[in-house]
Length: 144
Image (cartoon, rainbow, N blue to C red; front, side, top):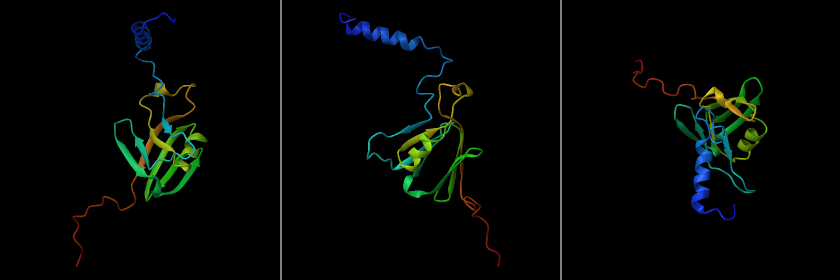
């Protein structure tokens, strides 16, 4: 192997990549959240990625409370907006990472094949609920 040229090594690596079946999820596809490493690393925004491509960021400074309930998942209130994360393996790493402001992003699963025993965490659904009264019709004229 020490006598291999760079071109041979690159060809072998490319062949290994293309040998993964298309139906088999890759390691990146199976990652449902990212936690910053380093003693003093903190994120400023919490990014939510949904399977339809929508990305939403909330400021960590807007967190009012965090609740984990085994039956209802992880609930986080950001200044009136309720973010609900449903799935399995949400504690302790994801929950603790959010408490420490170290989770850069979370994402929903793209397909059910991502729910397998090698995944310690699986996020099946993320819901963002706006505060009551948000986006109500402003065209209503006040009654006189």
